[in-house]
Image 1 (cartoon, rainbow, N blue to C red):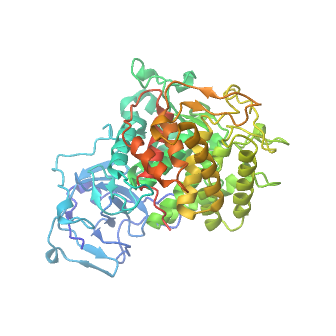
Image 2 (image 1 turned 90 degrees about the vertical axis):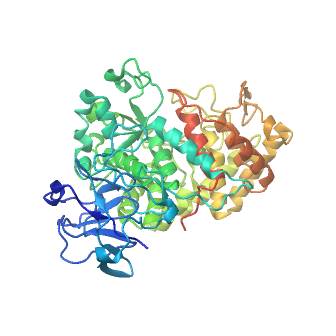
Image 3 (image 1 turned 30 degrees about the vertical axis):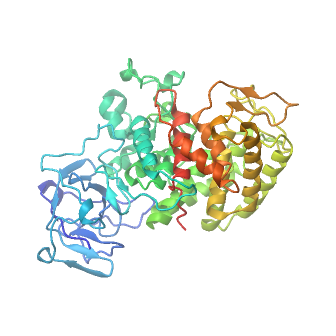
Length: 569
């Protein structure tokens, strides 16, 4: 039962015109006062005077249901656009889905948080508290938060530990701890970056100004140190951030996937808006009416040719962004997520699917659209394709799923049992000539390390026998190489075909490869999966300017094994 929590104490809000509309929703009139009691989908506090509905998760809407701001229940901080205030909501009436008549303040026991048990009640902040946009927890002060439930960690993220997992001894709290560490090291909001680097921040409004005015605080996933001077932040010289001003689309897709599975809505929304703004940007040749694919390389929250360093797309990122939006829609019912996903899916079909054979292309530029294009099997996300088929019946996504599974089997059967990083339509390992794979393309390496995650995820949710067969072959391969001991997995990038190139042997097994080999047991070797997951759960996350890839895959696999990959269906 939701209890009332209060009255706005900042007079500025009573005069503030809440003429905001949620992204993807053009139907709102932006009215600031309710002409009738708003309809809610869960218990919520109702500030009738200002036309605000405040949900226990922290999302704030107008009476039409459009997101206009955010509320931090732990501190009492309300953010509407650039306006920040601390409120006491103990005396506000409460709306219930089953009874839209608000409870009066006299009928409630003040101070109870909707959806939380008495043991989980947060303590509201004092009237002097504000939500500091420059704090290092990865959450800014201006992030709208879709509805959720359960206990809160005090930063706007509502935590609910999963109750089921594919391993024998899941450790979901370990994933939570890894997530917090990753987010602090790699997620930064616009408000945080602008506060740290005010000269750089002067240009942020070019792309993001409209969204900031609507109450959003966009967020990016920080990439590793890069040599391109356009990735350098002059004001950060002498700090670890100096050459880390860039973000890659892959990181945006992963960041959205990671945060939506954790149901960290402030972080998810921030990264989503980063993606959405650039996909709609005229600097990338797009518009709100016809948004495009996510540019592969962007610079901070910057604008124009300087902000978008490489307009070409990377298909895996677009797949993950759209998939995350569909999952977010399924978890919250918010159509703004689904609407954006559909637009991205349409662009993806047009530019990243081979119409002649339904294979997934590696990007939207001419180098990936030749008569015999080079393909990347780690870009095949079966769960994504299945979800696209649900929401986009106008395209043959089932045909894509079948074509890709057929192609994947062809490649695997043509070699040692592992996959090359890159291959042609004949299923043979080839150099993509992208400047980074000439010495590794034939091996199970930095690209294909993601294949076990994507295929085991499909088996976890849909039990596809094709996924089972692929995983089984990979698992038999590594069980033989390690003599069945998860503590003896070699630090080797194995060759797809020794006649093409040799194995590449290293000294230390990386965390992402330990995790990838763990996942191969998902279908028919759960003893291996559980033992290997136990080993992964002992690995600490060491973050640095060069650990982006290892850390982000460590976290994804940890979510997979420890129960966070729950099917929203």
